[in-house]
Structures are given as structure tokens and as C-alpha cells.
Image 1 (tube, one colour):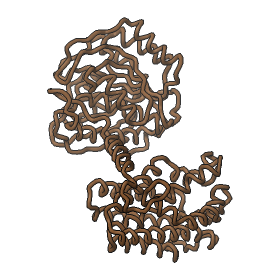
Image 2 (cartoon, one colour; image 1 turned 90 degrees about the horizontal axis):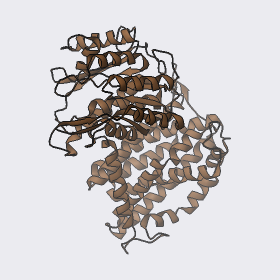
Image 3 (cartoon, helix red, strand yellow; image 1 turned 180 degrees about the vertical axis):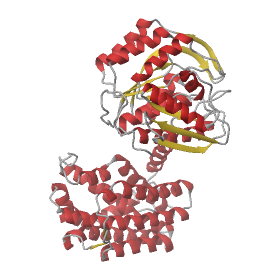
Image 4 (cartoon, one colour; image 1 turned 90 degrees about the vertical axis):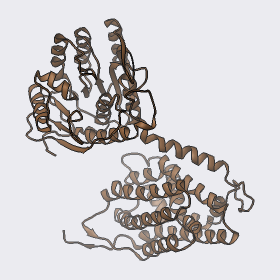
Length: 536
């Protein structure tokens, strides 16, 4: 990766990118009534990647997975009215431009774009039909070239790249890279060079920038064998636009968009849409989330229905466990850790010590979850526990390693060692039901503490609160949903075991809660870290 393309730079001066969690993205393109390409694909992509989608239609296209039947181009004043309606009322963070079709349409979009240029402009020059024929006449191709300087990124396939340069289509990856660099240098625009049309068993892609000697990003992966690739060009260009507006980083945006699209192609056959070249699965990464939501709701409806489980406030086994730990929770809630964290008054050294111990704890907790996943009797719980183990690793890397002084050697405290040894032994050698009861407090207590802190500290989400990131992580709806699912798991398991095993589950849960309380208290009691520099 080169450094020629800084995260928020653009070849031509324009508005700087201010990363926005939910970017407002406008698609200017044609339609596809079967949903795989054009506006429909763009809007699905924008939503799937966390943006807010808007559209201005350049052409009403009657097409399906087998081909195009007819195209109707609305009057130019209709296109202008659509564009003005958006820009008069909404701040646009990114624009993706697709099918334009004619010189008048190109000029109309160019005029609007010149007056309303957003921070991110991605141009997908739709110029070549699937069968290989040119969609634009010579004048329209020339007008398209005149638009390139208004874009931040151009995403032609290899036939379109050749047309833009008026050369023969590349037949090798090195030739494609050379053509991409030539286009970038000529029009001072980033170019996403896509090698999907090349022969061979791999598909390379690269991001080239003006004046560079090497690509800013380059990757290659095995070709995915499926005929369902309808709309991949529309989808990829839109994905990069959304991610660039979210992150301000073109290299990261291309890398993530490429990875996301590959998974969408890999799962395309699941859709079973049409008899020709079907669409990709834009919602592939959301399907599992919906399954988990439905699964959790279905299981929750059955919680407490078995009279063999002791009833709590909601008739569930886990509620009875919770009620029996009120003394432990009271100590946690009133202890120095929670109160000073809510106030933001905890000494930084104490918090760093806690995080250092938490890093060590999470490493072993991830192993404990993985051990339970391997032993799980049902696939749904195996997937949940494996996901939890992987989540520990991700959260450790994303949050804690940015806060802990990694230049110092950290050793586990007595409390940390006692807690992790208990979890590892219980999840490895005890009854599986006892193991899942032992790991529940980490989910449930952290979610409960996060909720308590969010209620106690009005400014907890403010940037000036020193521990806002930690608190937000554990009061996040995704984490609280995981805690609820862990509770559903324990209730589900408890209904199928003997009273003797239920009692062992109670003991394991209570012991884990006690160790959690000691884990919170320990850094405050010690007053800070006891670490030795590593010498680096």
C-alpha cells in the first residue's frame, strides 16, 4: 500500500470528507424492476452498509435477469426536478452516478453536480452492454470523459476502461493496471481497476491514484463460480461511496466493499431469483442477525413454561439465579469501581490496570466460550458461543488495545487468575449445563452495569467523559442482545436437566458473580497497576 492517497484527499479541490456514521447517499441511475441492478441495487447496498439512500432516476428500464426489454428516458426537466428536490432539502454526503445514456442526460447531471458537489462522488461509467455492445454514441462517450474530473473515484470494467481511453481492451492484469494509471493521470481521478473480465482463476482489483507508481490498494482472490453476478458493478461502486462517506478513507473503503461484495456473490445462489444471471445477495450479512432475533424471541416465549424450574419474577430459571445474587450485585453497584466510573473520577492508572486485567481475562473467557461451543449439543448454541468467542477477540483488539499501555508486561492478578481458572475448568470438565451457567454472569452483569452507568451518568456519552468508550461498549444494544440470548440459552438448558444439575448450575452462577465482584474491586483496592516495563 502506498501513501500517495491520504484518507481524506481528493484529486481536485472540493469539500473535504467529514466521516458520518449514517451518510446520506444519492444514487443517480436507471432502474431494474427485478431488483438486481441500478437504483434498486444501489438502495439495497446503501442500506445494507449503514447509509440513508436517496435516488434520482435517469431512465426507467424494463429488464430482468435475462436481459433488457426497453428503456424509457424521462424528460430532462423531470430529472432536474428530482435532483433539485434532493439538494434543496437534504445535505448529500455522497453521490453514486450510474447509467446516464445520452449527452443531454450527462450534461444535466454535470450541471447539477458542478453546483452541488458533495464530498464523495463515485462514477460508474455504464457504457458497455452485457453482450458487449456500446450503449453510448461517440458524442455521449466524449461527454462522459468530460465528467471524469468531477468524480473522486471512477469504477469502469475493463471494456469501459478501454473506451474511456480509446484503446484496445486489456488482456492482462499488468496491461489493465497500466490503463487504469493512464486514466488516473489524464483526468486526475482515482480509478478502481477491476479484473473480473480477465481470463484465469483469480479476480484482481486495484485502486490507482494520479501520479502514483504503485496502486494504493491491490488484492486478488479466487473466482467465485456462479452465474448470479447481475448488478455487481452497480453494487461495488455504491458500496465504496457509502463507506468512503462513513470513513473518509478510500483505501479502507475499497477493501471493505470488495470483501463485502465477494460474500454477496458467494451467497447469491441462495436467492433463486430469475432464470438468467441472477442478482447478488445484498443482505447476506443481515440474514443471520434476523435469524437470531427470531430465534431469541421464539425461545423467550417458552422461558419458564416448565414447572420443574424454580420461578423468579418472570417465571424463569435465570431470574431465580439473579434474585439469589442480590447481595453481590449490591456490592458491585455501590462499590468504588462503578461509582467512580460513573462520575468519571476513577484515577486513570486504576482504569488502565482494570483494562490490562480485562485483556487477560477476555483471552481466557474466549477460550471458555470456544470450549462450550465445541461441546454444544445443538447447532444454534454452537454458533452463538463460537460467535461470542470471536467477539471477545474483536472487542479486545478494537477497544482495549487502544487504551492499555502495551509497552509494559502485564501479569494476571490473583483475582484474575482465580476467575479464569474457574471458568476454564468448569467449561472443560463439568456438565455442559454447568459451564453455560458459569459464563452467563460476564454477559449479564456487564450489560446490567452498562445500563446502570448510562442511567446514573447523564454525560456518559459525551466526548469529555474519560471512560465513555468503555461504558458505551457495554450498554450497546448489540451487547445487551447477546446478554439476553445467553440468558435464553441457560433457561433452555435448565429445563432439560435434573434438579441436581440445576443446583450445580446455581452454584456455578453464584460463584462466577462473586468472582466478577472481586474482579471489579481488585484494581481499586490495589490503587493502580503493578507492571514491569518490557524495555521497548
